[in-house]
Amino acid sequence: MFSFHSKWRYLVMFLGVQLVVMALLSREGYQKRVTYFFRIFRKLDVLSGSAPGHRLNHTGADVYANLSYLVNVQSKDDVPYCPKKSPLTGGPIHVSFPSGLTMAQIERKNPLVVRGGRYRPPDCEARHRTAIIIPHRNRENHLKFLLYYLHPFLQRQQLNYAIYVIHQAGNYTFNRAKLMNVGFREAMREEDWNCLFFHDVDLIPEDDRNTYTCDQNPKHAAIAMDKFGYKLPYKMYFGGVSALSPLHYLKMNGFPNNYWGWGGEDDDIGIRVSLAGMVITRPSVKVGRYKMIKHKLDQGNEVNPKRFNMLAKTRQTWKLDGMNSAEYEVISREHLPLYTNITVNIGTEAGLHPPTKPPPKPRKQKKQEPPGDPKGPKDQEDPEDELTDFQSQH
Image (tube, rainbow, N blue to C red; front, side):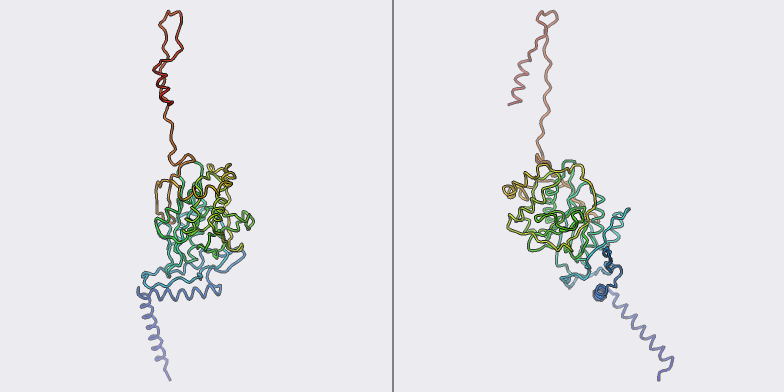
């Protein structure tokens, strides 16, 4: 029978072995194994609902729940593909708009996001590469809330993604669809994305099962907004948030460039999908839910009075007006901590550089008769002036 001292000796030896094993596992070469065990525990927590903050309540889960389990692996050799269904997704998300939120706070909550708003899963190879395109002008507060929710939302889906904010320079009427054309071109210049999401800045997704990946056909993701009572307003609606692969985009010649102001472009895009021989796919109403940040129409984005007449001509114009006719100038490109900001000049309805009328030439003063002339001052112009005027008009 073992004595008390023998038991104590074996206990010390056992603890020593444990310390050695932990020291070995902490070395860089064993970090993948540590990550592997974390992933197993994380899956068990998710399945049991015991992960911190993951349990659902009537208002949904915290969008940042479970992301603290992610470990940044130093070596990327032989990293397995991410599972087809992410173990991090859980369904409904609680969305609110607290006051005082700052970009610095959002950065701290997303430590694995790198410059330009880029992210890759740290412990597996993503199956999908998605670019988020956000048309923007004078919506900084809305953008802040969208970034707060969108970054963890996409990380839960284990995507390789980047966020592009396409900012319209100047004060001329806003043109959302043309900015999305710009976003497609500029994003594809940076990387070979296999899916692009065109995303309004004021819409927050409320269910992480609404995957930001492309389907066989163009996808309308924002099927159920709180603004419309969480239901589709009409069958051909294609607004808010939509997804296209590069092939879809080229097939439909992108988006129209001539919708200046609010309204009409979404319906035009929906018609283009049909004219290009494709159909619109959608998630279920239960999953494709979005909360809109309430706001009034912006100055410079007034209702477009021409939209209905333009929609009636889409069948004749869609092959002429779109990706193949989009003209713009990139003013600046900034790779910020949470997104890539591309500021562009998209011109006006008169074109990218509308012609300007030359200033009128100064006219010579009329000659007057010398004092004492009984006929008084003459009212005719100098013949040289008339010739100059004729030449300027012809």
